[in-house]
Image (tube, rainbow, N blue to C red):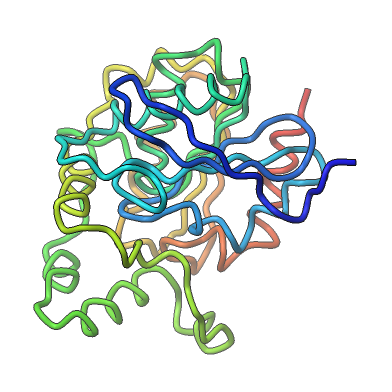
Length: 267
């Protein structure tokens, strides 16, 4: 009998030999979950169990995070997408559903556009197409995150991730604030990769049915990016969560997980 309570961990190898730690949990059709910038697989701890009624969930520590190797770089979202394919190959998975949020959504765009035969259904959350057409966060957000005081920067990030009302009932700890053990070069590499993302020309090549999700108070990745993605990806459904910030998948967990599960279960 398969133990669905605890992830089974293993090591995949990227094309360049980088060790990639991956974790599989549950039984059913594979669903790969891709985390945000500078975060390890624990980004998904709060919600991954919501999909185990029908799916096995697969996470990975993207290079530079968690138990994966932390090479000097350079890093890019295309490279992260190649790493996802290496994990699927390692696990013997021909075709999976893919759910990426934040930078993970950027990575998922490349996975779906460059490997359409490997993606059955695609979910993109709180993300953007990148490049010249993307709507970027404003300068005040960048300044808040770049504060010299680490605790002030952390408080600013929490405020960007969650609304005050949600935080009042959820004092933490939070698993979406970055991998604390990342070396500086890897953290910088993730920042460069996310900032350098530009999948605009590739988006029309996505063939998988796609669900786009966003919080309407997201200042990290402004919600104006959702209609941009919807206009470029051929087969999309969209949903916006009123009052939610960047981590809508936790703050609006009940509704968001139900929407994703229903979308993935469509035939």
